[in-house]
Image 1: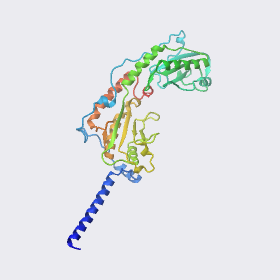
Image 2: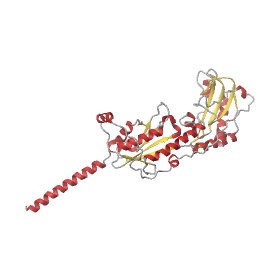
Image 3: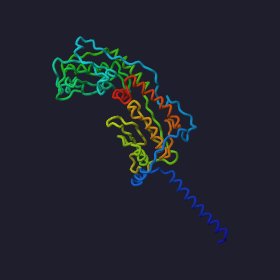
Image 4: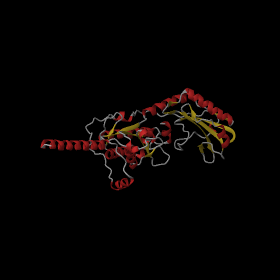
Length: 377
């Protein structure tokens, strides 16, 4: 074999080796990132330092800033508050007033409910009242409820066994995210409430239908104009993420598994309240036999503004979590159209959110309150 042939053979081997190494490196670089073993994860927790937004903007600070009102899908026009129905019955002075805002917010409330008071000639046991309840607690698409007045506790409550009631009130919600209460739903409310009243020998006092339907439309208009649901996309810059890797990083920020596959939630500080934030990714990847082999390129982080109390500072938490996940997972924060968002784009949105909170407060529908959660549901 000549020197030339030997040289060509060596060059061929070197080139082949380089090609194999390059292909292996490319495959490894583009493979979905996997979750760390538990031991390594614990060690990294001890040394991790969380980054913060750079006041001068992120790596995409030259990208045009989206218009904030479009980002939060809400306007802030002033809308006058509703007026509650006055009871004209001659026995009205014997009835306790419908539930007031300052008394409690967990049950029927004239601000967002049509309320029909009723009085029985004889005390009615809680067992009899429960037996007379309609089989469903909805009228059309609106929640329906019946309460009894506990004279000992001086409060309205859902009828309880062992209690006796003389005064009751039936109510149906004026509006929710399906729309305003209409004439057909109001008529169904009257039928259900009257059937209950007949069962306990009580006389109901129904407010004027046209007045209540008009009030429902006005409340629905206000809710539609002040219903903000923020959603941001976190997209992988280069290598995709495995489901296990994504869940591990989200868990570091306090997220826990949701009810549905591919959904994680950041719990509120008070148990039983809606989550502060939702994180959603490919549900099929979350149920794969080997979650380290799944390939996820983006996830969605969302905030339902009206469902979370402003004292929880949910938008600030969203911003913090977004930048940490972007840093740790090598991702970029985008709007729902896929356009990258610079850090400075968040400030106008935060300002508009504070205005929205103030509008809800002025209407006695503070974000995160039980009334707001019912109305914006």
